[in-house]
Length: 387
Ligand SMILES: *Cc1c(COP(=O)(O)O)cnc(C)c1O
Image (cartoon, rainbow, N blue to C red; front, side, top):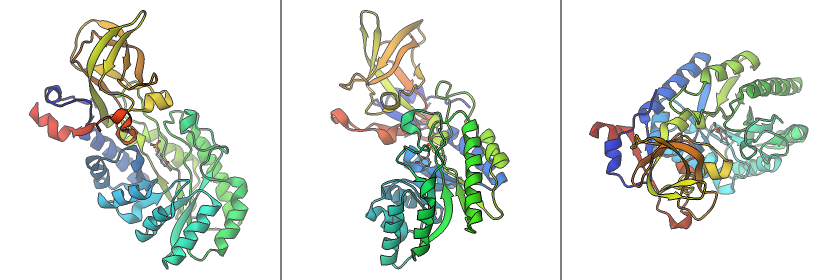
């Protein structure tokens, strides 16, 4: 499914702004949810990828739960109608206030990342006269083969409880009166395209399950996190391959009777439905390089600067002959560059540029550096009927 840009409507909007194709989003959501239902899998959308209300509401309406990594995300999920019983809460540094928010809403699970966190949750739950449902976020020591900034499942990462700590953790949990251990949680990284990594995760979980079984500890929920990647170079091509993804878990993960399998996709659901729309401010000829200077920068989309991410760049309004450009933003940092040696139809001041696949980790990571104005968001349902 190809995103159709309402270019006439764009001409009247001040740039830069984010554009969301909600039809594409809904198509992806329906497809993924249908496949998950057939297999009996529970999906929790990772809010941190995109927290715009129309996006969240579309996702909630399709029956997704929520995966939150802050107290404010829990509040946001509740506000936009997600069932608190469908909320899972991860994060290595949950503050006391954030834990209390989770306790007040009786969320499905605190995905705990350290021994000390378990202690604190038990203590706070006791103070509120309630029980906390917890899962252990285990560090499976699996390399996700992705960018080192977004790999999270190897032992020297800050995330998760290491397997060699498990004995001690279980001893502690047994002494806590306000915790119920309901599950095991894993999340090994993001933008994973080599799906064999997920097979490795399944096999590791099977070993870990054995360990719990030998100790007669019943685990009702297995949560395998998110991480499925998207094709940034071809945003109009195939949708993220959830079919292969789910089938790997169906084939290789040995669930025990009555165990529920949970997933926390973020990027794969929302990335392709968003684009950052910008105008060309200036064309500047260097000695060897021709620069297209945009009015959008790393303040709107930091992924290229932060993770060397590559996003497809399109000129929406020119049909000139192809030329090569370094496409850069206006921010006073050399890393404020969206792409080097990008081939675009001959580009001039005023042209509209789409930077594609910005629906995940785009707008949410924007900043006011250089005292920039926050870019607005527009939605297909509001613009397409003006075409
Ligand atoms: C970020 C995150 C996700 C979502 O990751 P994606 O790569 O966007 O699918 C899921 N679970 C946890 C715990 C996360 O931190």
